Length: 261
Ligand code: FPP
Image 1 (cartoon, rainbow, N blue to C red):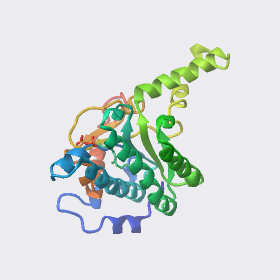
Image 2: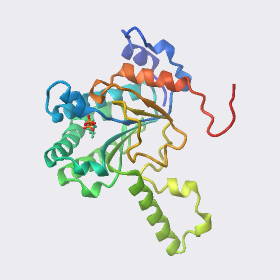
Image 3: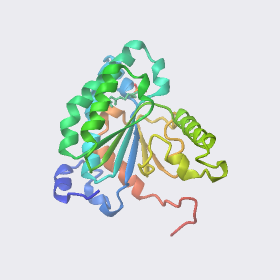
Image 4: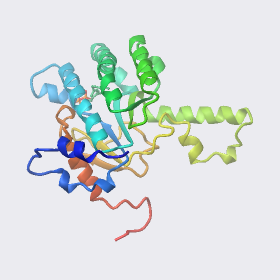
């Protein structure tokens, strides 16, 4: 995406001591950054608050992350909001999250319009409460013509389930005689994943220190650079984002090839 440099500089004015926009090469911004937004509960508990307050605070970080991504000119931003395993959480917390997804989406639609952001969802939405599904559909419809950054929200998402689904779709095509099994290639699998049409992430950021993938984008992350920060998601700011991009730009991405230096 094209960067509006004046807006970008304004957005990153008044930097903290250890990071500034000057350290970032604007020619080498990752195209797609993906986030495992972890630590809402611990953030709240460390302040003596109910876990739900952590999720509410997490919405503010997410809004800032969307804006930062647009200012940096990303093509795509994706975030892991709710996994297929998250249904095991207490019913009250699940209900709160579902409600929060719906209300936040409605509230943030003006931002998506203003910033020309196109919404996508990754995951099986059929299992979501009707209110949430309806609002998600409205978000899809209202942003379908937007031509700016793609914002993909993973909800009721599990990577293995996504790959199983792609296998089922391909098997059905093969059974119909539309695809010959030996012709199946990576592209055919990619195009049957929820992320179809979105470039693979260049950078995966996980907050709150955990070093695992938690069944997230297992196929798509094959050559992605990882950045793990101890910061809890509600404390993740535009400056944390810049630190992640700075770290990304210091890497030597070889995609399985040889050292270039
Ligand atoms: C991880 O923290 C966070 C989640 C499971 C939910 C993510 C939701 C948000 C950031 C709220 C807003 C999202 C949208 C899309 C409006 P955790 O509860 O696993 O924290 P813990 O590991 O400290 O317990």
